[in-house]
Image 1 (tube, rainbow, N blue to C red):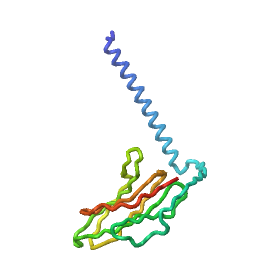
Image 2 (cartoon, rainbow, N blue to C red; image 1 turned 90 degrees about the horizontal axis):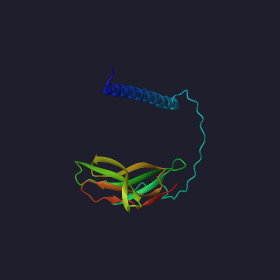
Image 3 (spheres, rainbow, N blue to C red; image 1 turned 180 degrees about the vertical axis):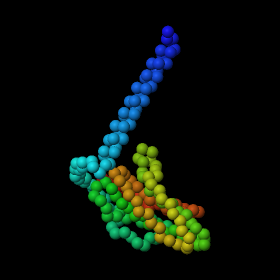
Image 4 (cartoon, rainbow, N blue to C red; image 1 turned 90 degrees about the vertical axis):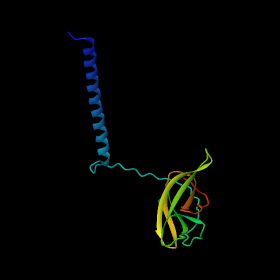
Length: 168
């Protein structure tokens, strides 16, 4: 004769087994769909999508010389649409040329809700020597708004570019 606890245990095991089988079926279906989308044998029904964009040029050609204490920003030629490539340049002077000096780039985006500049992307570098023009090429894709570049050097004041607008 089966006790009540044995019946509950058997029912729970049956539900667990059903759940496990369902999870396996879902996983197999998901993996199958993912594999189908990346397989070479998958039919490609590609559609051409045309994007239009309004552009506000920041500067004309890329400025090769940079004044110390300033950052120049140039928009690089790129793809049409909402993907924009930018080149930021600044001068870093090393007070101890025999030691390595570290610097960091920050691309900040203006947040109108909090009225603050928020980090969007970062990059770091360093060198040994007296002085170097450092640059950073980065992309902003599909995220219109106001941006600025910042160059931070160990032991020095952060240099900020003028703000610029990316529109799409």
